[in-house]
Amino acid sequence: MRKLFTLSLPIAFAITFTFSLLPHLCEAQYTDLHDFTGRNGSNPHGSLLLSGSKFYGMTLLGGAYNGGMVFSMDTDGSGYKDIWDFYLFAGPNGISPYGNLIISGNVLFGITKNGGAGGFGDIFSIKTDGSGFKELKEFYTINGVDPQGSLLLEDTNLYGLAFTGGANMDGFIFSIDTSGKVFDDMHDFSGAGSFNPTGSLAAGPFNALYGMTSFGGANNYGCIFYILQNGIGYTDIYDFSGPDGREPHGSLIRIGNVFYGMTRIGGVNNAGCIFSINYNGSGYQVLLNFTSSLTGEYPYGDLTFAGGRLYGMTSAGAANGSGCVFSVNIDGSGFIDLLDFSLANGQTPYGSLTISGENIYGMTSAGGIDSLGTIFRLKDVGLAVTNVMAPKETTAVCPNPSNGVFNISFSYAGQSSSTLANQSITVYNVLGENILTETLRSVQGNDIIDLSSRPNGVYLYRIISTDGSPVGEGKLIIQK
Image (cartoon, rainbow, N blue to C red):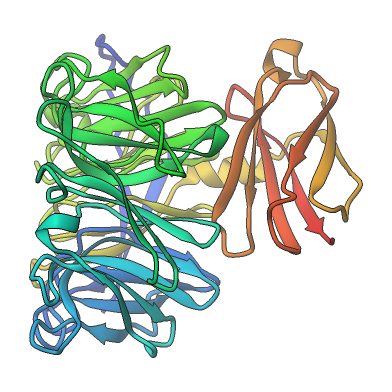
C-alpha cells in the first residue's frame, strides 16, 4: 500500500548556535512506498541498493521464517518481491542480515549477524533473481563475530569488519574473494588499542582502506584508521575525545581527499556530530553538532553526497522524537530538516539514504502501518533546482574513447579562479556505483584521471565546484 503525503516544512526561525538553520521555502513530497508487515520483512537495519530500475535490500527480521530476508522492488514501489528467506535450521544459512547489499554483475553480496553453523553469522552471495544462494564464509569466534556493517568490493575482493571475535575477541578486518575460496584476517583489534569496529570500510587513495571503531583509541571513544589492501600498514589517524564525537556507528564517505562521517554520540550536546578529516589524518573538524529537537540526534548510518550537499538521517530527536532526514552544506552550514519521522511515516532509521535525481530513498526500522518499518521516497526540490539550473560550462574530454587515461579540460562561465580551484570529479559505473572521487587541481586548465585498471565500458562523470555547484558531466568510454 502506498500513501502520498505533502508535508509543508515551516520556515525555520533565526537561531544562533554552532550551525545555521536555513529556511525551507519549498514543499517536500513524501511517499510511503512500502510498509513492512512481518511476512514481507520487518525492521531493516540497512540501506537500499539501486541497480537499474530496481532496489535491493534486506530486513533484519520477518520473512517466511522470521529470520530476515532479501527483497527487490521497483523504484515506484511496485513489484515488491521476497527473493530469499533466511532460516536458522535450513543448512548453511545465516539469519538477521545487517547492513547493505553490494552488487557485481547480477550477483548480490551481504552479511548476516547470526545463524550459520557457528551461530555467529556469515557472508553470502545470491543472484538478483533469487537463485544461486551461496554461503561464502561462516563466522566463528576466531574469525569474527557480530559484523555491524557492509562489505566493500574492490576488484575481485570483498573487505569488511567484524565487531568482535578474532585473535583478541575485539574484532578484526577481513578480506575474502568473491568466490569465497580465499579468506584473510588482515588485522586483529586489541583492547590495548582500538577495538569494536562498526560500519564499512571506505576506499581511499594509495590503495588504502579507511574505517572507524566504536571504542578504544587514546580516549576509549573510538578512532579513525586506515590499512592497505594487502593487510599491512594499519595506522590510527585520529582518536575521538568526546566533545569532537564518540562511538561512530556508520562509515566514512570520500569527497576528493577529504573524508566525512558522523558519530552516534559525543559532540557538545552528546547527541552526535558531523565531521571531516583529510585522508592523512590532518585537519579534523566538527562541522555540525546535533541538538535533539532542532536537528535530530544519534545518527547510525552514513552520509550521502549529492548536488553539492551532504544528506543523512538521525535515529532519534527532531520534532517527533523519531529522527529526521536532513541535508547540510559540506562546510556544516545551511542545515535543513527535510522530514520529521513519526509513527505514521516511519521511525528510527538505522541506515543511509539512496539518491537518484531529485528523489531521496530510505528505510526506517520501525513505524508505518504495523510499526515494523517502511520504505519511503522524498522529493527534494533543492536537488531538482540543482539539476534544472545547469551551469554554463565547457567540459572537454580527450581522447574519448581511450584506454582508461582521460585528459579533462574545462571552463566555467562567470566563476572566479577561487571557485574553480580544487573542484572534485566523481566517476560512476553504469550501476551507479562510485568508482572514483578525486580533486581536480587545475583552474580552467587540464587534468588527467586514470581509470586504466577498470574494464571496458561506459562510465559517467560529474564535476562539482567547491561551492557545491555542478560544473560538468558526461560519459567516459574505455576501449583497450
